[in-house]
Length: 338
Image (cartoon, rainbow, N blue to C red; front, side):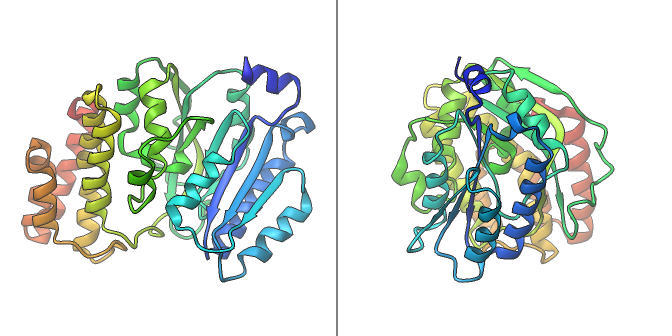
């Protein structure tokens, strides 16, 4: 078994792969935390980890930040400096394709591993053969140590033998690279559709793993903290509406219930917050005509009528109240809505 062989032979087990471009301040904190986590491991555990950084021709001091950490341990850190900007999607795809370890953890350059959590992850990976491991986490604004109290005590390891159970528990979060550790070596699908302009290249290997995999798991402990409000620059409805629907329908052609669960999850859990942030002027995404574009994409889905249309059309005061209703309904009904 590949995982056990890696453990016994002290061969690398996990690649933490970080695509980055012009975010040196965030990257420095990200690498600092990874370095601290590596220092806390035993010699054997440290030998199981590789760190791969793909610098997409950054014009700030990203190269200098990487160099200072690479100097600390050249055996652990592998760095590629692209001579030209190949685009965010291709840089992400490069990170996955370059991994030679059994598992790959694509990690956002503005996210951080929480103290003591890398060891917890490794302890699971050396004992299990998992196609996808979903990790708990939380978002932060200023300090990654500002852990929200809600759900703080939740922990545990949950195995899912059925892909549908796993998808209903994770749905839209399958698009978030930092939340997933995946098996390497999957032949990516629909490369042109996924890499050029989709903003979702990771689905080229994540969704085939969901479709063809045998074992999935959820680690409910909070493993990472993700920077809030640091994404955007693209149309959210186009990416998480049009693109996500087309990609999931294509890869799950013979398993439409998986595609539907992801699409329903986006409507029920992600877009309500997006709409409210947009109405408050707090969105970093490109401007779209929400009423027209969202109605066109989701009009055939009753969840759109219940969860999104009122948030779009009601006066902002009433929309805030309705948003509370949306959250309560989601909490009470959970995966039944998917």
